[in-house]
Each structure stands twice: as structure tokens, then as C-alpha cells.
Length: 156
Image (cartoon, rainbow, N blue to C red; front, top):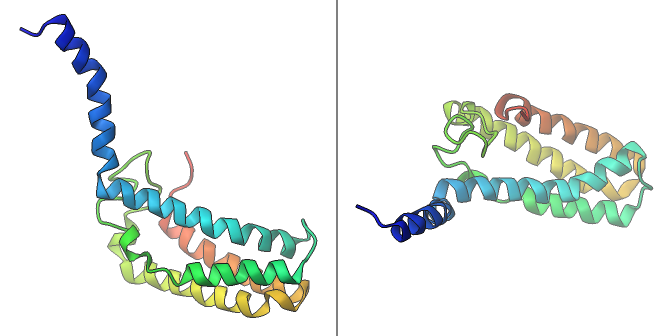
């Protein structure tokens, strides 16, 4: 029979143990890293989209810097961020990655390669004026959808 103190300790410690298990869970770390990666991508892509759309003033130096950062980020070996068992089906509420990624990794990798190629163009064109930036960013935006539409669930 458990004493009241033991029961109380169990009630307090159980959530801590669960949180600790999640903290050491490689799948959760991969999901968190994916989210972090996308936040960094958006940190630099956001101003580029803003300049391209005329929502913020075009600045050749800032555009070139953001594009250079995106190019560096695009070279990251993202494969380790997509561990099996980290899809939305596997981790509801934690991941929006659809199982289609793992079902057709070749198609997913092709979509990522398309984004990388578009980022290369943005990096080459970003500092050459708003018109050049707008064309390059528009093409890059299509590649974002080329990955997000087939491989990411909508927000619930």
C-alpha cells in the first residue's frame, strides 16, 4: 500500500519523468530541430519576400545578406532531421510532416533540391535590384509550396 506521501511524490514526479523522457527522445529532438531549421529559413526569407512584394523598401545589401544566409542554410544536410517515426501520424500535435516523406523520399529530396536550386538563383540575383529579386523570390516561393503542399499537413 502506498502512503499519502509516496502517492503525492508520484503525482509530482510523473510529469517530470515524462518531460525528461521527451527531452532525451531522439525523435522529439529531430522534430524540434526541423522546426528550428524552418524558423531560421523564415528569418532570412521573410525580408526577401517583403522586399519582393514591396511591403518593405528594397535594400540591395540587406537582400544580398539574407540571400547569402539562405544559401548557407540550404547546404545543411537535413536528412538527420527526418528520422523515421517523426511524422504527424507518429507524433500527433508535435509534427506536421506527412508520412509521404518517408514513403517517397526520392520525391521529397527532389523537392528539397528544387528549393536549393532556387535559393542559388536568389543568392545570385538578390543584390541586382527589386525586379531581379522579385523574379527570383517568386520562383523560390513556388519551390516552398512544392515541398509544403505534398509533405506538410495544414495547421489544425
